[in-house]
Image (spheres, one colour):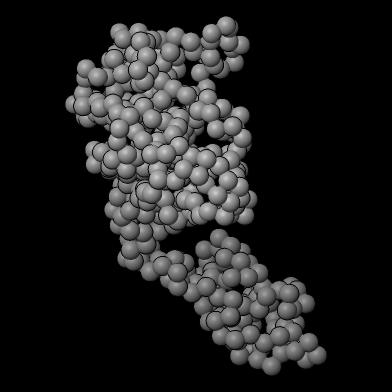
Length: 406
């Protein structure tokens, strides 16, 4: 039997970051930037108004008050999107909208709320200083500045910045394409009522959802029968589009554990008993010329999802160029709200619910119990030397992927 750390280290020492390629900015969201990006243009591209109001010479409204407003003629309107080069003479004003280009000569904007909103003439009831409510050209980003460095995760703000500075295409580390294969003669497709001895194939849906939640692209292949030839054919057919393959079931010691039977003969597959609960039977290796990583997870749903969080998620993050969470997890600390027993000699992953940093077991802890799994929001990590968790004990936790509503 090997430790959780040993199995994870073997996985992380094997997987490689995917080769970078160029994509359009729209497709770059969720990927990691593979190169520094410099701005092709400055931001803002031109000096513009930060408010709806009136462009003025600040000196013309100096000393203006509610009782003694400064009254100026309004000589033009400037809308956002205006492309005319306008100039403002001293003693005049122009009505201006947010984002519209400032006229030459103007050095401040009076918000409309500080005026009477006049169209031909405007009464300004408060003075403004030079530069007030004005966005100067280049005060956010200068042309040539490196705005995003290689290794940056591209979320919505970063995608917007790339587009704004003139980048139509960028080089990124792609999201891993992950094929999820579930095996078993007993499996039926979701939506069908299972007969006696049959089980709905919820595992492949769960693992595919976890793949998506970690930021990779899942491809589900459900219901491969317990037949060596059929599994071999499925694996060979999926290698062409897979950056990684995940199987569930068929890795224990049973007579019909086809996954272990087939994969033991090919690639670099290695099957181990890992000192953890749930999820003891684990397999990992590579297949094909491209050395595609293959993760074989246990068939019990809780065991499969725990194994995904502990072993697969860090590997997929590494393949995508994203830093993985530390192991053992140290950043997410919680306190046990109640006590429970743990098996000696194994790292135990207890499904828990969290409330203000306090955690308690989420119902039954059997590896088949989907009901209690769906009620949990984290895994409490109980070290192998701990046989009993007591109320008030500090515990590291792994948040479950995708449990927070957007």
